[in-house]
Length: 150
Image 1 (spheres, helix red, strand yellow):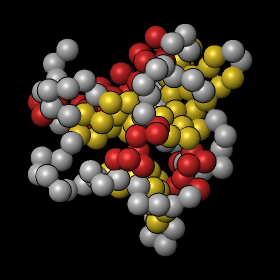
Image 2: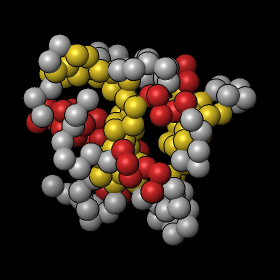
Image 3: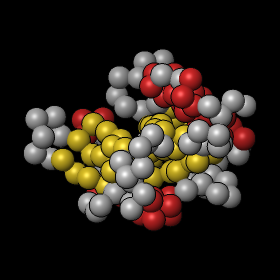
Image 4: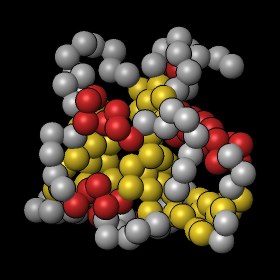
């Protein structure tokens, strides 16, 4: 697999991330149901052992300049942080490496910290992930290392 992520524009990176997330779930025996239209923030639904989960996929790449951060936007109108079966599947792309995979439950967005932002006073309220070298220890507990277990 090509790992020069710079050849992909943002839309291509997002599409690739969604496809990769679907394949990851399939590889662990989940059924994956694709949405025909992505107009409510849910990219696909997965099911295993009779349990259904809504998945929103976000992809980002390592900043080119050291010391800078990425901000991953999650619109509140599409993301209910009290929903037990809702997850953000986050893919982190670093040039020359396979992407790192993270699963963040919606309920994690109930507690704001340096990583997780709650912008309730914005004109269009949003949650966000402020990803930087300093905040990576807050993100790492969500990393998928030994398979997906929901």
